[in-house]
Length: 123
Image (cartoon, rainbow, N blue to C red; front, top):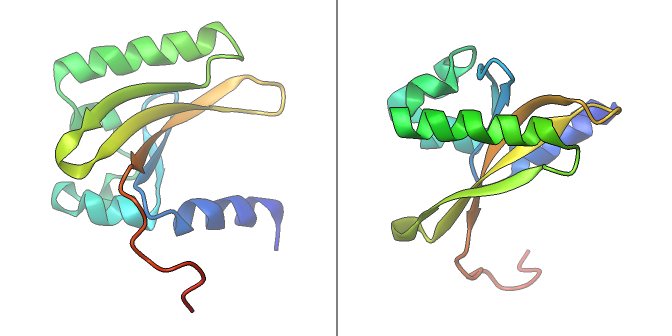
């Protein structure tokens, strides 16, 4: 398996929604969980569209501020953006960088805080 296929597989297997964007705020990839989560807004058809169109003016401004912060330093790579109590979920924006550390995009990552209900190694 080629290296990039490993990375795609990691993202695709994540149960949390992951929406990857370039620096023009265009959605370049949505994992299957994101496609399902945003099905009512268009699902996979959102790829190629601006993520800014999916947010209110205040959120758009904050997202632009985060991108500027990411660009300030190679050390600026993750920021907590919101808490969704009804889903027990925290939302983060994460910087994407190339091998030289140049900012190339970002993604939104959901982290659910519910305790696992499955049994360990329950095949």
